[in-house]
Image (cartoon, rainbow, N blue to C red; front, side, top):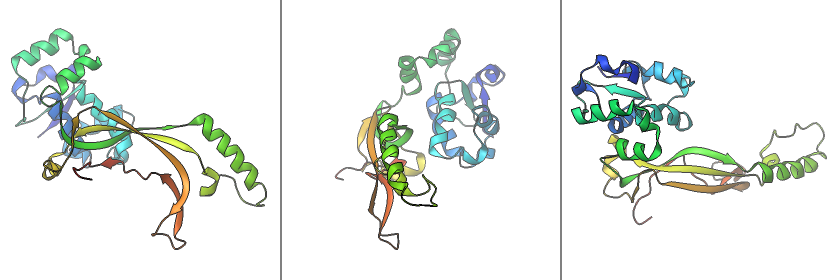
Length: 229
């Protein structure tokens, strides 16, 4: 049975059963849909301050996966895909595991097998334009004052013309999506893109009215960028 353990407890496990941090992160990401399938994973999720019911959501995955990606926590498996070798163990031990927190060393170690290739854009953060949005809210509030009995910010139009930026990172394809490998664009893993969105009323065929308030351009939390699109 797979088990996730903090680095302070890793010495009690056989080196041959310790998964490389890069592949451990991929496996833990898959397990977040059913945390109880990996011993110790609920504990890791709890220490990240995240509820078990929310751990599979894209916004909450990041702090959990960073723990295995930077080797704060390790995955112990019966059949690891790429177990740590003696050289890896010595390297981590000499560094006291602290060097993995350094971004340059982290990218060189956790992703030493794959630096670029097919993948997907995954939302890692959403930044709101506070200054611009304050002006929009003020204008919308003045407009809403003529509508007696309505609570401000209760309708989409109260958020009109506010802005936000979606920050997405290029990550490897999961095992179940390897069929997209040949069609996928190839980019450097860790590459970041920023998409600025505006909250507007736009066409929406799913609504009876034919329109709705939403962020434009529309962007999914996970985007598979395919060749030729």
